[in-house]
Structures are given as structure tokens and as C-alpha cells.
Image 1 (cartoon, rainbow, N blue to C red):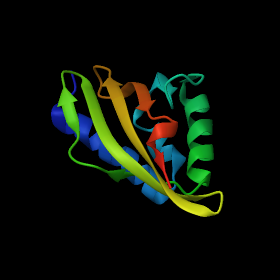
Image 2 (image 1 turned 60 degrees about the vertical axis):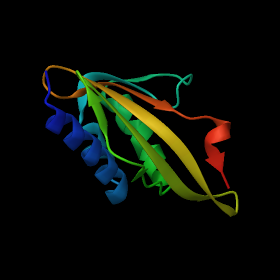
Image 3 (image 1 turned 45 degrees about the vertical axis):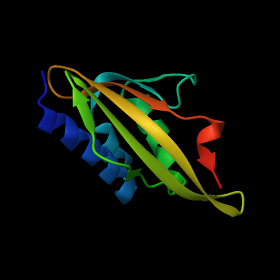
Length: 123
């Protein structure tokens, strides 16, 4: 089972990947057969190739993640709240999100889910 420190480090590496606009840094935290559902209710991206394609597109928007408080860890899971400030459709706005990571025994993310909807977009 991954340690709390390993799980927190993965979250910070994820945030750093967006800060650097580097999809490969994001993909590196995931297991080969990981599943990303971002946001919940959209088609799942399964495996490194699909996950990388998703992050290439996400980071092309210039999105940066700003943590809103500490990373929460329990058993082999981490949850973290953050917001994404962005300029969209001619105006400044923020999207408020909670992501969850489920980790495998090697400390890689095997499942990521993002929780947000229209009510979490403020502008």
C-alpha cells in the first residue's frame, strides 16, 4: 500500500505538471491501465495513450491548478480540492473541482475522478 507521503507527492506532481504544461509529467503518476474520468459522467480514458491525449488537450488551454487546502489521504486514496483560473469566452473565470486518486500497491494512480459541473464554474 502506498504511504501518505507517496500519495501527496503524486498530487503535487500532478499540479506541477499543469504548472509546467507537461502532459508527460502527469502521465507518469498513472499506472499503465489507469482510468481517468474527468469530469464524472464523461467517457473514461483508459491507459497511458488515452490519458496523455486528454492531458495534451487540457494543458493546451493553459489551465493551471491551485490547491484549496491540504491533500486528504485515507487508505490507498487521495482527494484534493482546487480551482482553475482561466480566461474563456472573453472573460476571466474559475472552475472549482475536487479530484480523487485511487492508488495501486506500487503507488501509481489506478483511477482518477474529477467532480465538477456547471454550478462550479464562476465568472
